[in-house]
Length: 375
Figure 1 (tube, helix red, strand yellow):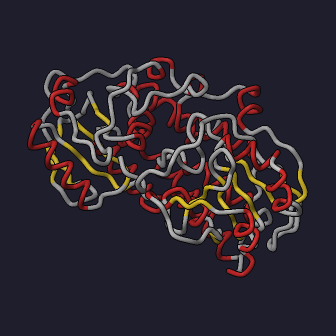
Figure 2 (spheres, helix red, strand yellow):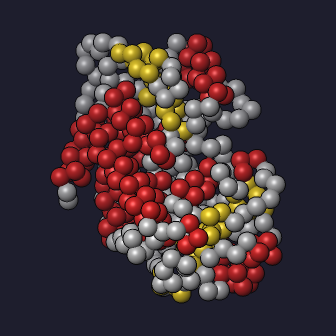
């Protein structure tokens, strides 16, 4: 274990035993939306506005969590700290078309509400509405990939946990730097053309710019899904149009798609001679769902998967280190094998033409895309 990893693990463990001081002077912070937020010195009851914030609070301050949004499934719990894995659900505040339950929020008695993801006008309006109604501080933190180093440090300062935040922010910086180094050496016409497969038949995808394709597109992938998008950027694509897009990489986002891509006769015609990547999803998806700090492991995975000559990676070791650093739990060899079970398959990529090991998805059923990285 590296010095950085030891410091991070000690910081996470220390967070679970520290208690609120007898007197905590308030502090003023400017959140990512430019709003002034008055906070206690060390918030100890933090309410997540949505799923991305829920993951962030767990990673940064598991002792201060009020609850999960939503609670983790039984298959995810072994990857999480025992003191946090069974916390109750606290409800999502950022659900479209649904008014927040002010009475419920007040009864939970948070000393901070945290939203992590989009900081668009609608979420600023929501934050101000809830803050006014409850008199509880509400902070918005930009959670887009390229903003993660800054966002992690900002949250560390807000929560009085700067020492915990620093190795996480450093990991984010290093991940993006490694990717950018690989991209700089790969001409645009040599970058992979991908189709993101979702849902029970694998034919649901997401158009360019969707939150579901953020990691893939940041990794230099060219999204071949085109057409009129539904809510959240979703799009249903027939097999003939998938083939017409000429993808050389098929990425299975969830378990339903992974099963379809492996077994469906229509898919076998499309995947012949192409690379198939199946995204691991425990305790949260490497490509998102929800889009939070879990995507950083997806960045490292895709750097290696898309540009093997530039970003070779021991995936099991990388996953183990990430889990230890971010989640505070070191997976066993058996857990890692279940998480990233590999099967050798032939691939044809313009950048390498090499042989790949896809990684098996073990969790989550199909869901429609959510709004980009909010909550």
